[in-house]
Image (cartoon, rainbow, N blue to C red; front, side, top):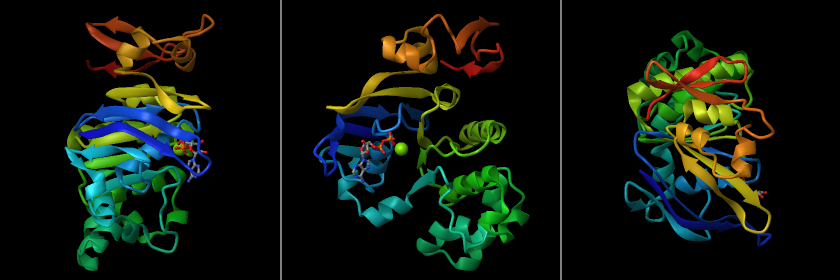
Length: 274
Ligand code: ADP
Ligand code: MG
């Protein structure tokens, strides 16, 4: 469980990026932060692994204040996946996956050997481990980023627009892969996106942000995808989920007793488990 307790972050210019933000992200679930650029999503994510310190308030993981943890060991115990993969270009894929395990004291040979299993786990051929990141497609690089984040079997996974830079088809595959992995691994995941469809597809809980120039990012609505779709809190949320002006890009319908989400073309996006 990750708890944000009335956290505020004010950077140099004196305006808060986020103010008095409180939220509990449950264990073993995917909580998605979705909202416009600049609403503080990355700031909040980085508070969890202490890459950003809150100006006030606390962040707790399973009841422990992260401020009381050594930042280096804390960071190595949390998986972190970035939009551009963040892979080291001059290291092989296998070495990239093994990075944190080696930092944690594993023998290099063992860690590199184990990286093959991690590549398989994310649906890649272990032979790709011998290549360099630039020799992979964007989607493959993101899978490697996920494999690296999972290599030390962390309980918590932070994912900051991890699929934002890949083409729609690869993105869809990565989303399916993440859901498959999550059924197997049941990590506590904070996932950031600015794509509402991705948020609804992946999130057990979705937190929709708005941003106010004076007060910074704040929660516009939180709930399950079904709750938000069924009852958008206000016009901002309604327009953000595309339900304004008579359009209903996403909708839900009961099918055989289950809630199914449909895209504007009427294609089912998935089933919401409530
Ligand atoms: P998001 O990830 O939702 O786009 P961010 O957390 O990156 O939002 O940014 C929130 C606000 O904080 C923005 O106004 C941004 O310009 C500001 N900000 C983020 N990081 C820094 C920083 N290191 N120094 C100064 N301002 C920052
Ligand atoms: Mg960001």
